[in-house]
Amino acid sequence: MMRAFAARMVPFVVFLLFCAGTAGAEGLPRLVDLGADKCIPCKMMAPILDELKKEYDGRMQVEFIDVWKDRAKAAEYGVRMIPTQIFYDAAGKELFRRSGFIGKEDILAQWRELGYEFDK
Image 1 (cartoon, rainbow, N blue to C red):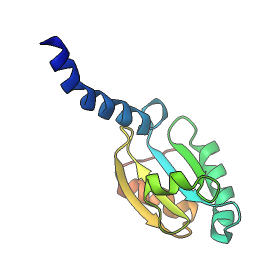
Image 2: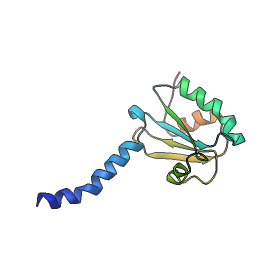
Image 3: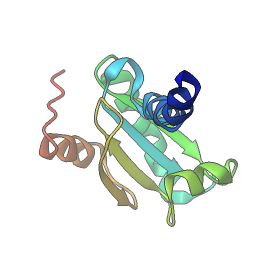
């Protein structure tokens, strides 16, 4: 009886582990930028992402994934065009997705639209 219950719980446990793995660090909202280090718009975004990472450390997680070097990640995130930015809440739920270059102020404006204020 207990083995049957445990067997039914396996998919649920796998789901919980997956959700835990997609959540932001320390329960922080997360911006994932999927691009490539040789892509021109991606190169233009690199200093913006670095700046956001430094300025909002402890309040927002910023991550860059080079999908030319890690093609499995491109498939995992469903990327069709680079750069692609995905905004996640602190629980790891995708809130918004867009493709193309985006400036720092537009990123912060998108976070505000999603209900996040990052005061300096």
